[in-house]
Length: 61
Image (tube, rainbow, N blue to C red; front, top):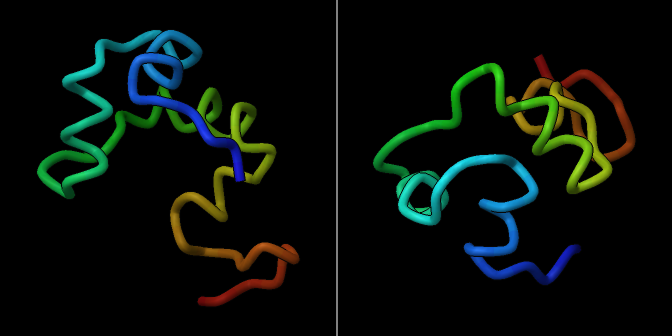
């Protein structure tokens, strides 16, 4: 897993650090427009981020 600080992730995704903090603390969820960026940063699919697939790409739902 990528060991990024909130500031590093925020910069890569194009948000501020408070947005990342809200995501991490389950106060808010990323907008759909940020899912692709997050998937690229973490080298996973958007479906994985949404809980639709596991890490191997198998459907969970």
